[in-house]
Amino acid sequence: MNKKIILGITIIIVAILLFGVSLKTTGLFTATQENEKVTINAILPLTGINSMYGEAQKNGIDLALEELNTNAKGSGLIEVNYEDNQSDPKVAVNAAQKILTQNPKIIISTMTPTTTPLLSLLKDKNIILLIGGSISASLAPQDKYFFKDHADVTEWANTLTTAVKEKYFTKTALVYFQTDQGEAFAKQVNKSIIPILVEKFDPTTADFKTITLKIKESGADSIVFAGFPKNAGAILKELEETDTILPTFLINANWPEVTANNVGSKIQPFTAGHEFDATNKTEKAKEFTIKFKAKYNKEPTVESAIIYDTIMLLGSKVKLCKNNNECIAKELASTHNYVATTGKINYDENRNSSRASTLLQYKDGKWVETN
Image (cartoon, rainbow, N blue to C red; front, top):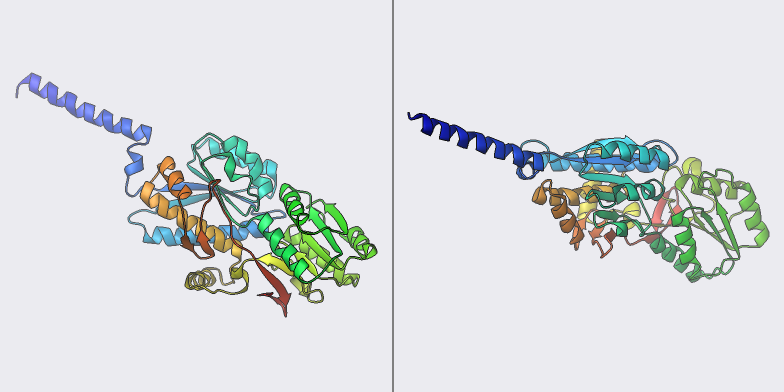
């Protein structure tokens, strides 16, 4: 064969190989790989004051990924790497900085206190941030790649204050934790009722003796309380031990930690919850509960269910877009009436998708829907 022809063929082969390498290094080639894994980095409160949320969310994520990857062709569709933020904002920042060295595509962060300090780190980096467990609507609007899928604190406030007014309580004590979401909750409550007493507390508080005494001295006929589950359990215990048996309206109350050791049986408190907490009305909810109990041998919480829904929705977008974050973000933002375990997911113009709340009451050892 003519040397010039051989040389020409060699040059063409080398050019093709170099072109393939170029596509691979720019990400254009990998984005079309059918069996390529998409990695999620999840920063969860697996230890610390909010560990019950982190455990529930991890269970929901793992169940969703198991389902998605079982149905995927070839290798798994999505994999997850977990980081424990220890319920501490500074630890969350350290975890995010570590993840940023790995050129991440998708990050999950939960809870407002440990997500807020991450926003400036992730802003304008084209990294999809899925926010779970946060009841603040102010986080997602800060970047077009940020999405929050959870309840909303103002929705909870409306549910509780509506119940207070319908039950004709006029001397309500408002007690709330000193956090951004606590302030938002109090602001919304004050739009509907005028509290006879207003008290703030640090979210690490476990002793409510002083606040309980102030409530008794105020002559309050009811209590509206916003705090983490451990806060709710602590004040219920203190109220019952001091025989301060008042109608009490809580957020974050439908957790086993709140009513452990029969706490709450005397007061029979109310909480702004989700119908999923009380009963599985839809087929999707029933199917999820069966799968969850089969895997973990316990009843699921709404935290597990909501983040399961978020991941299942993400999986449908990854299947369509592969590793193309711009495509995934656009597809998520356009989500309308996605039928999920906990109701329909609809992202608004600020990329917030909230869940309607319902009034629950603790009776006979369980939370039930009430009027």
